[in-house]
Length: 338
Image (cartoon, rainbow, N blue to C red; front, side, top):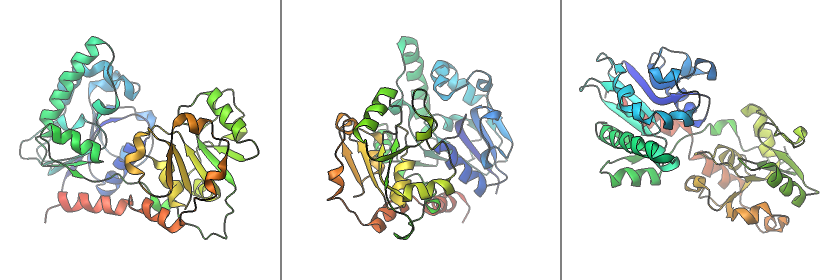
């Protein structure tokens, strides 16, 4: 069976690229079609294959620049043809990439990881005009798919409002890389902070508020702060013991999917998040509490932990619902011939 994979852009590694990696491992001979590709931006299974990209690869250096080329998106998509010899197209979409030109007989299976018009807002009247046209084009193309999956209820409801039926299939992350260690292996003594886009002053205030606690920050060093506080970008094998030896993750992460929060739950730890986080739709277990951002920034009393002792196995079970096996089987059963 000859499968093609498509996506909006391949510019740097993020969770959507990990979804593509899984498909690339499942269909090792599949060509990849995308609006924009930066060859030097990442390694991994997804780029170990023929990659066909539009001329926008020469125009777009970062994903947010897609807004500047909204007027060109329909023609760019239609200008890249997926051959009729393809038996099926599997698309990991942020809302755009299901519009590549194809033969009418070739079935398209679209997984909607996010919808750009829900998470990004165009600026100025020109962007708004062209973005509206791009959105209308995308909605028309969605209706040509044989099957549409949506990553969560919000996306499902948005598509349904435009008459597009979808089945909710939550994204996966590699739960197996974050095991639930026996309680005797690690002592939970540190607080992990995922600063997201917090400024230096906000992070400094949190550190002052948590004075006396051992605090470690996820991510790379930020200018103006002690680099020794930061963990950098260790691999999952190095991260798992860090999560397992932390008593709490305070997460200001603003990405679409809460990988770090789920990793903490998978290792049996608790998570605090701002109450307005868009990740809440994936974090409905008892190991997560939501607090107003202002209160979370001012947090200096961890007595709230004393009456909050969820069973680690239950936290791991919540994370395990995002195991990749379920996702992979759904794709295989739908796409591959009976």
